[in-house]
Amino acid sequence: MYNRVDSNDISKLKNIAGDTNVVYGDDINPDYAHDELGGVERMPEVLVRVHTTEEISEIMKHAYERSIPVTVRGSGTGLVGSAVPLEGGILLETTQMNKILELDADTLTVTVQPGVLLMELSAFCEENDFLYPPDPGEKSATIGGNISTNAGGMRAVKYGVTRDYVRGLTVVMPNGEVMKLGGKIAKNSSGYSLKDLVIGSEGTLCIITEAILKLVPLPKVSVSLLVPFSDMKSAIEAVPKIFGSKVTPTAIEYMSRDTILFSESYLGKKFPDTKSDAYILLTFDGNTEEQVENDMKAVADLCLEIGALDVYIVDTEERKKAVWSARGAFLEAIKASTTEMDECDVVVPVNKIDEFIKFTHSLADEMNVRIPSFGHAGDGNLHIYICRDELDDKSWNEILKACFERMYKKAEEMGGLVSGEHGIGYAKKEYLKNQFGLMQIELMKGIKSVFDTKNILNPGKICF
Image 1 (cartoon, rainbow, N blue to C red):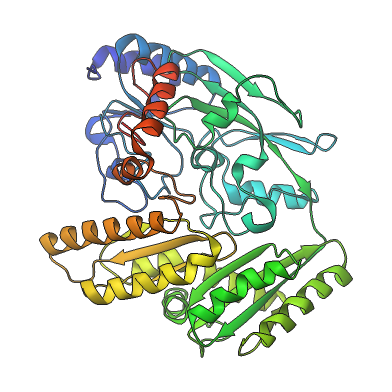
Image 2: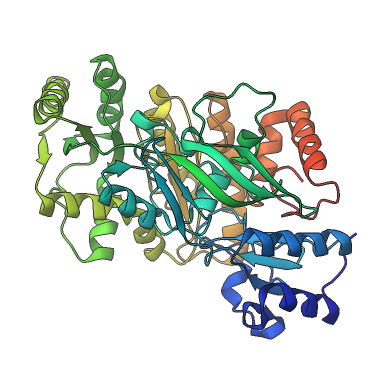
């Protein structure tokens, strides 16, 4: 079906991208065979570090003519194997396409290349008194990767997810044609929204080379509350009551004492409080101290009324750093606590979070395996981790498969979905097929075949 890369292809790629930007054979670093979580591995035949839309266009024209598979990779921080070149072929790395091209204050937009890191974009916008609201936990991810997975993050409760902030895209099609989708316009009802099909497509439809992103004015005040509860049920039950109070926090995160202790150990820094079994962490932002303080006080009083053990105001820079650095390190801390792990990135209705977490605890006891978790209590997106610890290969594979099947089935029973923000990639595609059924999968395959007639872009992902 696909042609392998030969010496003529290498010469062509060097002519397009330059000798120093083409790496092949044993000279490719083994890290390019996997993403952050591992478990799915395959080396590319050639790695090309690209810098411009024009380079990518020429590479895709050649790959299309030769029927060579192409996979796009940013920082490699994905967790489901989306950037793993399952069929070998060409791996395009976009990290050097890292320019912020334009800040347009009149249209509240910023135009960037796909290799710009989330933390770089966030810092740039704040320096110019703007906010780019999407806030996934992995700040070293690229914007191209965020768009490709429709990343959400902690501020999704108030501001929404990446899709809500993509105004326009420049993309290269599998045959090398360059298209512009959307633009700086705020509204668009002109036919099918091809832009929105691309968002969340994990590099299977086309290659993103520029993005026009919507900004909002930077809120002048931001304060957090750390609220301890005696158990997770009480903590999660507080969330719908907070929404019922007509206050919309910027973020509502849940965390257990065990996860906080992992983070403390990993960072070597103390969390403000670790005496309780469960916590919710809330953030409020706005343009006046009075507004933010009123919202914060209303939620603090409500939490105490419904059983919170205390309320800690996180308003100093020292406290903010202690709390949010710990929250940001949860994934790496859990990873450091075990020999190997895999993630269940489900999303369930907010009022089902406690039931699902209880289910994971009973599953952990039944399977005799550790299953720590944390997540976004405000939108029901849970990050559940199955830890290998000292299990042998056979036991690990059996337990992992059984846990995933049970958890995805439980999420479906609750009206949830297989992925909240990390995508499907290769690792989760069978669970997607089981949940969506034949009609939706066939529609996805049909869309893929129209965009990519030869199936050369990131083959083997999502529904193939």
